[in-house]
Image (cartoon, rainbow, N blue to C red; front, side, top):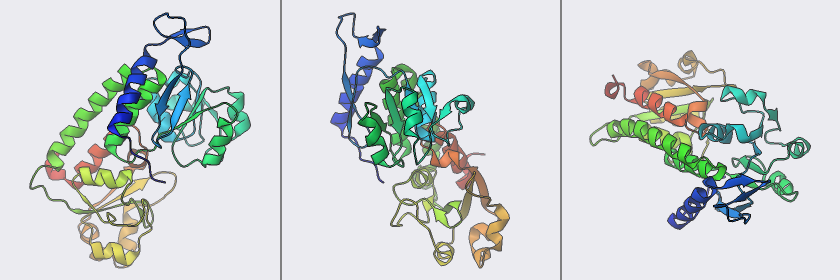
Length: 311
């Protein structure tokens, strides 16, 4: 699925709401503004353009995506997370939280946690989420596809959970790191070498994916930039014809690929990357999970593609 972008008006609306939400005072299970004695209900628009109505800052959150789990903890809302999906493993303290499933959710376990909000990516079937929503548990979708979008979602998550200032501080520090990379990689005259990033044999990142955006701002040219899907399966012949100058393979539970595997593939030895030993490993989580660790991945990928700029 592709995410729906926010208009400038949408962002202004939710930012005002986020400031309001972060200033609420908890009292007797409700949230009140400025001691006026009126319970506040506010609406925030998610990455699919869905308005999500909340009676106050959520205090019991279930995260059903590893990426959203990382985002919540990064903005300071970790203590509000009561359940996570089966793949959430960062930061370390999430391992002590109740697991609620992944692509198939355990609705009974989720209900037992008494959450007031579910946050998710866009891989969980919407029918399962709608079923939970019909039982009084709203859900909020984070589904951006760019590094810039990830920064926006950090701010959104901060406002949504009552940690706006912490989120803004984090975004500011991450933007400094991003700028220190792109000021070099996107400078006029910098070469854009053909780059192949593989997360599973012959699968790569196509247009509209985080991997594609990261290759671009790292100063490379994605071999699959014109593919027909976000995560295409490429042929051996196509990749060889692109003659990648740099090959990056991700390391994670989904793959056991090693650098030597590329040399053993038929005819891959004629590519520049293989013949010049320009094959590198990266942690899959630093290029596929849309949380703040993407910036760590950006720094690594930029240094791999342009070592001459970061020595």
